[in-house]
Length: 76
Image (cartoon, rainbow, N blue to C red; front, side, top):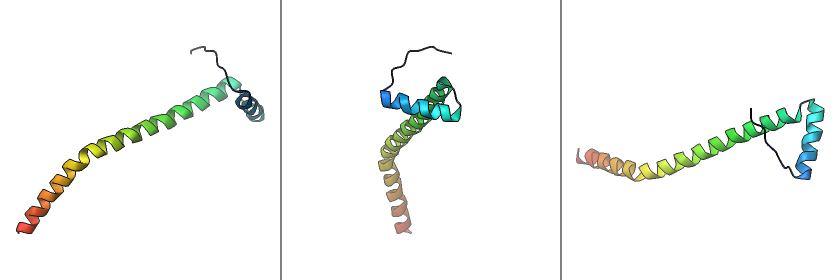
């Protein structure tokens, strides 16, 4: 486990304190869970960007193949 110093905006800290007390959850556990959820969110966002980029790269090739198939069908 890593130890780090963390600076939070006052409003964020106050809200986290209210929530952790209501949930009877340690502040450290709450922050760990929050960072984990944020990591999952950003991994999905990065994957989406990567898939969009790769999709754009293959779009032209896919359209070329489609046109070739259409030509073959039209010749029959």
